[in-house]
Length: 307
Ligand SMILES: Nc1ncnc2c1ncn2[C@@H]1O[C@H](COP(=O)(O)OP(=O)(O)OP(=O)(O)O)[C@@H](O)[C@H]1O
Image (tube, rainbow, N blue to C red):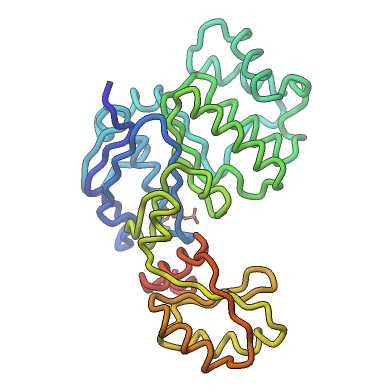
């Protein structure tokens, strides 16, 4: 068994003239939870689809669980579970019937028992007779997770699995993710939520198809070299646009009622905020992952309106 769950080199995907994925290298060890982050359209889904053999790369090569992504797609499909952004079910079938159908698709042995076990482990047993079409977002997502893990894949690829799901359901979903990881499953999950990113062993940040940075949360924040000041002053909203125009300010963004101002040079940043907003109290705070990603996206020349 290879040590790397994913080992791809120089992956490129072009859709006509659009370069969706731009020479991506990924070496992901087994048994870890990796997070895929990046603005909308940065290439996360396209990369995931190439890794699991659903999309032919324009260039590059690689292996998923030791299988060649360009010639061994069938083996990859059996060894992975892929939860797409818009997972779908047979709405007129019950939860149990949906899972039994999936079990048959994978030719799983002793399907009835396996479905019962899966229903129990994901807390779905009490609702097994409910029609999938009548489930709320959180329950649908649980059903989707059951469907993609029932064949006991070595690798789970989850594409924004918690989008539109309430905080309680998101937390429970992440408890399941960590449980599966503790049982040896490797998990790659794309997300826009910072709290979810912080629950990953390793983060890969993409912008415009390229990997901008990767590492643990601490490494990414440290390597950004950013210093951050915060103010809760009442009139700070009036000053924010002016602060954003300053050369030494790399980003200024609200976190609730507080304004975070970040830049790479501590002295220059402090001098700037004291010049622009002299009567306001500023407190140096730890740079957050969100501060870092906003600044990195800007460094890459990718404000949202450009995407
Ligand atoms: N089948 C396709 N045909 C043409 N362009 C595509 C196709 N699939 C993706 N793209 C383009 O490739 C780029 C990357 O898209 P992708 O869906 O991989 O981004 P993403 O990071 O997953 O975005 P999101 O966070 O919104 O899901 C986008 O500009 C998208 O419009």
